[in-house]
Length: 341
Ligand SMILES: NC(=O)c1ccc[n+]([C@@H]2O[C@H](COP(=O)([O-])OP(=O)(O)OC[C@H]3O[C@@H](n4cnc5c(N)ncnc54)[C@H](OP(=O)(O)O)[C@@H]3O)[C@@H](O)[C@H]2O)c1
Image (cartoon, rainbow, N blue to C red; front, side, top):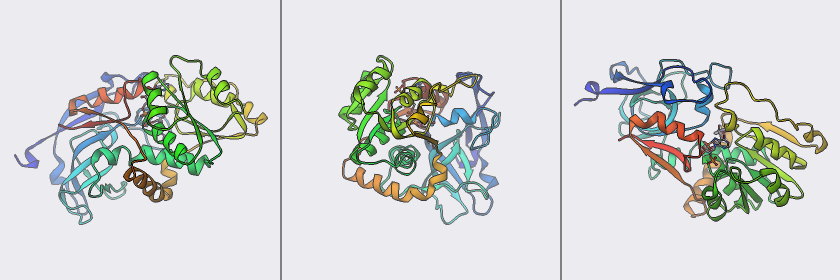
């Protein structure tokens, strides 16, 4: 069967989620493969693997953000690794592997004028590595800790969401830079990974332990750098234990992404005044100049066997929405990916 005769399977946003995202918020559609629409410079790709990011939940809401909201009825925006199946662009020859911010469909026309260009996946790098350990989550951890957080070797560093894609790299980057690292994650198994695999000095299980009490015991002199992926009560606990002149880097706030109403708080912001501490949010896209150095360092550590990572690879196009929902419980076991059959 030629490419043009194939069906282009899609998952579209059927409606805006109200609070908790549900399977019913998505719908399956079949479209034709857009091969005839290829203009000069454009490329037709076939998706091989999708990567899932909590930020996709925010893009489903109709509110101002650093990216426009997704449109109802369009295939859901998400990162993927794909193979070039037809090309009018010599930079992307047929057969090449690329990654980029695409959408939940089997085929797509990419490299369109005015859109972010796909990135070629170098020879020897698998789609799993390109979307996982060498992908955006790892670069986010690097930029957040080093550029925004000004990580120092003498720092006591606290990382929440520490067993996830960003968090597990943040733990290792802080550890490999000589810092003392405390990680927060859900459940004893993930806490075991933090200490035994990723090099954390201590782990706190937020599901079963009193985070504030454990922080007081583990860091009596306070936290110098807090890299927060979670927000809510976790952020409050970090603020309560911030050291004098400490830095709080706001990377994410996943505990509130499915809240129907904006959450109040944190209630203890005045603690930042007393401690002369600073708190700053960041988005990776503003720090793309740091990416070559970050990627080079991560590749070196990976080659030298100093970097550990976990991917949680689900299977099959039909399972895409269910796989996305795994991010918002403790189900995902590392960077959440899905391979198309
Ligand atoms: N600023 C940026 O440029 C940027 C870029 C990428 C990602 N991010 C942010 O970084 C954070 C982590 O992203 P990721 O890709 O690494 O995802 P991830 O951590 O791999 O996946 C989600 C994990 O978050 C934890 N979680 C889910 N709901 C939670 C809740 N209510 N309270 C506490 N933990 C909860 C779960 O781990 P447990 O089992 O430990 O609960 C879950 O496995 C997200 O907030 C994301 O939005 C920011």
